Length: 215
Image (cartoon, rainbow, N blue to C red; front, side, top):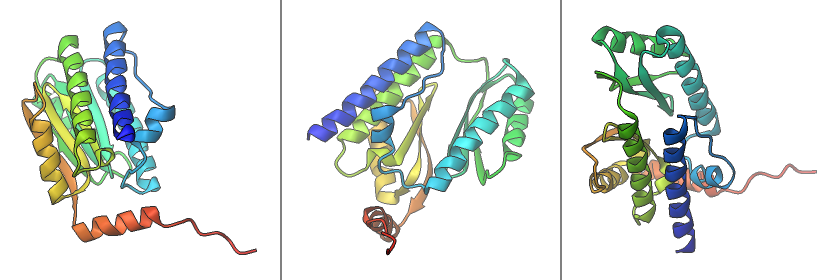
């Protein structure tokens, strides 16, 4: 119980810090140390996939900045090399061009393009989205039938996107949890679905002790 409370406190603290940053000067937030350790503890991606996802996000964001400058608001989120594009662009042509730009990034295997063709969201809306993300993560921590750290949560204009490598049972449970959070307009699932047997094998692999070289 103490561990669950600790994780929930970390998530709520992260949300509050992110909100404070967005209200002050839109400074990017980098979370490390204890919070990073807690959130990454049971990541179901391989270490190689995690590094690839970080590289995809960095390269993708850089190429979009080169292509569009400051006239668009696009978030690039990669999980297991599947990229989710959220945010706003001025025209349908810009939406298509953004997807084409990301498709040329190394190691991308799939793209979910959910960019809105509309004016960029306000600071008030983005601050609300940050708080919704924190509440959804905290609710997942409280749940007994899912592993909160197996999910990546993104919120844009009140729409919650759930990413992760999860079973159908976990996907359904997490979706229902997110729908129950206040101010959530819709839940979009971007999952890699595992069987229960695959999940069990992942757990066994994670729990196995590291091999010790013989002397």
